[in-house]
Length: 171
Image (cartoon, rainbow, N blue to C red; front, side, top):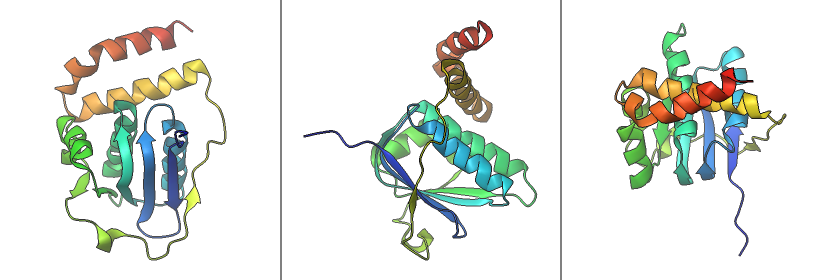
């Protein structure tokens, strides 16, 4: 049976903006999600709901992208928000282990009330391919975001950060 590619679906017209994660969210597919968040924030969107009902897993790069969104929205005026909903037990554990639950709201219910008003979703598709150095910068920034929200993450990611800094600075 062929493995399905992960997908991210978005309804950018609702408030809050709803993003559904289908499959595994990882460094392999984080760039288009970050680009989407950047564009939406630039156009005045400040409230997001991330629906993990069909998310089969996530890695630290994707979580660092979410941390970066939360950090940016904390500094915005008016202050924005990110709600993570319908997390599996394992995904909730990842969120808590990295301290994201102190930055982003975690809806422990089924978040039915946080769902979109409509069911019209578009797939988030990468508009550009990142070079090796651009990808390294993205992954580096994501991990630096995680360290900035919880100092204990420094020891977890020090080797990754050192490797990526060397890769970015060496090019």
